Image 1 (tube, protein in one colour):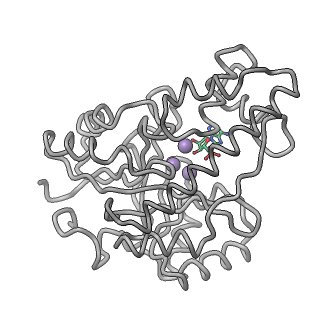
Image 2 (image 1 turned 45 degrees about the vertical axis):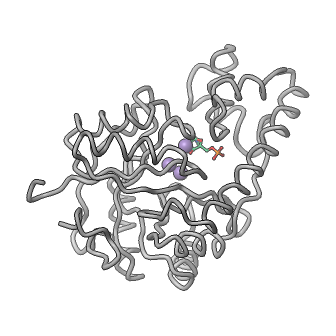
Length: 286
Ligand code: AMP
Ligand code: MN
Ligand code: MN
Ligand code: MN
């Protein structure tokens, strides 16, 4: 291993709404010069076994992870669990429940879209999900494929967000539940892409405080969806709340050019990287 490691601690595979298989994702990570990759699919650990095998063959370090859907103050947040025990029963049961919720939401989305004159959306989304975790992204692929929208950006804006015909609010895990499952599985909880929630300063402070009290340890300061100012702001929040700083592209596949695997800015001054946490796996903590 090199003296300086390159980390990307947030990525997706075909186990949820990414478009590369876990093996192809790890190959891409190797080609991008990464040393450490966390696979963090939405509400599932299903891709980890294949990713582990590919990582071993490529001599990369794989951090087994997950991105958990959370409802906090009537809004959806994403909490990453890094380095979780993939056999932990509490975590596995919690994720299973979330997938049931996802399937129920998907059926409602299908009904709403049908009422809006777009039939067969659930079937179309399921075709794209191929039996894996069903997400709004799969509805988006169907809507683009059938000519209802030209781009991912457009399809979310016009169909899949609050007030639009395909939107159904998800009722996800509570913050305490998600952190409980992650901690039970020995993992490190990290708030994913915190700038994306457009929280007021006081709400963000409230979230960071509650998160820390419930066992949270990290904030994704550097994210594929943060601009420079957002990165600086989140660095300050991580310092203020004594949270470790994490970095992840949130890579979903080659056709989503806004977040390239491993192409991340460095941490601003004064951040403590999450790989300095005591609980971080020793092999990768440089
Ligand atoms: P879900 O968890 O099923 O509600 O789907 C959320 C996923 O949709 C996110 O993880 C992103 O991958 C994707 N997504 C959300 N908003 C957008 C957007 N504006 N453009 C493209 N993808 C998006
Ligand atoms: Mn996603
Ligand atoms: Mn997310
Ligand atoms: Mn993600």
